[in-house]
Length: 404
Image (cartoon, rainbow, N blue to C red; front, side):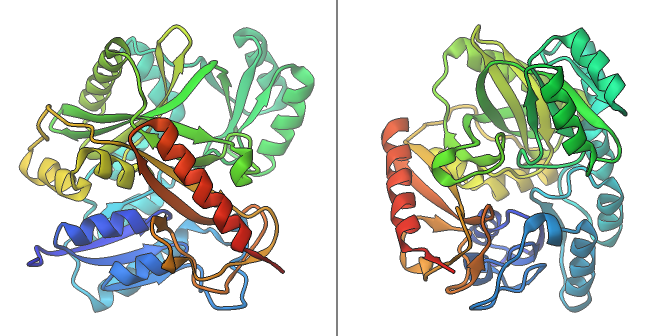
């Protein structure tokens, strides 16, 4: 395919985005965290925070992750390579100063840093949701334990406590009473210096809405089931992200509610390109908005497979040409992405020889306990079949790992 330009992708979860950009005809450069094998294979050039080497540990994410390092990598790449624009994945959503500086270096195609700031600044965001009459969990920010106890008393238990900056569900804790609240607040406030988010817990299905937006309008692509805190893949965080199943099988009534919410949010915050909204669908069928992810999401490859689309193409068409995808979409299958985590310290075999594996580490690198190993992508005619295929392959991979 003839190259249509060059893209620099930036963030933590980049392999699927790189593949999509390459299929769309772009030269692809990456400023990444993991530097996985499948990312390297599709990029024209890359830099990564982790230097993967056989026999060497990839370390712990919380110890090595530093948003400033992404800026350093971007500066190094654009000194040597011409890049037309930047596409963002996860990892920098709440680091507004980094986003502003990045956008000054090379333009971000999609949402501006100002938009990130509006949708990711929690007090402002939930205040706007209230004005728009969009269902959302009662939410407030506590600067100290006394304030947290008062807020929880007003909301009523159970509640969730969350760090103000973060992603992938890391650090979130549920409290059923004041004693659990105290333990959770002490834990989160040890690394969340700006305060702790207190949110009423909504019982229901964890989900997300994937959509394309342009010039105040939006088109919903899919509503997706989120896989959270699965013990089968050794996710240690109780609300940690473990992947998705696309699409979520919901009624037309709930889908219409999701579409109305999406249109309101896209218009109010002037969203552009590929975006996601995390929601909880209550037992009564009400979608409660939890947060907006104003960049490419972890559902990318699954959405592309079930709709037979290229999300980078859709994103570029929306941002540059103001063009939204057609409303008629044929869901040809279900697709599961399952993220595998290490139960203990292990050495990984050559996973590149297997089909349907993404985020592939180099052979013989060491993964620490609790850290991600790879992703499994499986399609099926039903939710059950795609999930079972993914779990079966996951079990096979776990059997191949070598404890060290």
